[in-house]
Length: 114
Length: 114
Image: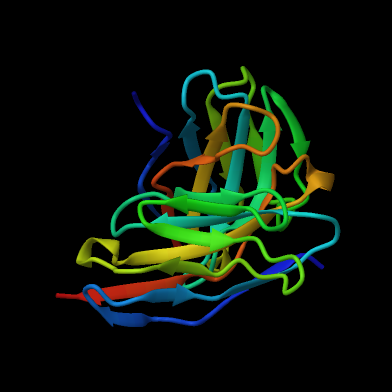
């Protein structure tokens, strides 16, 4: 079936550290890939997306590259801030659903300390 | 502008009660989605509307779950004869275009079944 696997959290970092959150997927066909973020007390927000192999999505200093050969979409940021503390969800959507239905991973909590 | 709103934000129900959860999507958004998020898990797809038509209800866990969007705007998710395993956060999302789009999420309704 179609699924997304994320590294377990929490990920605890000091401010200005380098961040990587791993995400791999299993899918039939060629999915679109997404990272969503949920800040404390807020709803899910789209952080970035990539729709085809080798595309790089980027936003707010975060980046992720669609790697078809390794079925991965790892999230990276060069220097995290305390305000980046949140739960991050990797997700995919599939062409056979019109790219509508999102399949999410279990989420990775990031805690950044000053 | 206003985002996706959901009400109530919190609902406590006794086992066996019926509940109704409301979603007000962003004005003009054609597509509307319901997801269920259990504690510590990622959201799981329940159902999808395009305007008033329910195009996919494959994620509804049982016939106790029913969703409607009669005028293509506000949607209601109804759960009959609630059970403890129904306890979760119910998320609503809407989007503007039909394919490869950004889903805008509401804050969710936390349902607790005692």
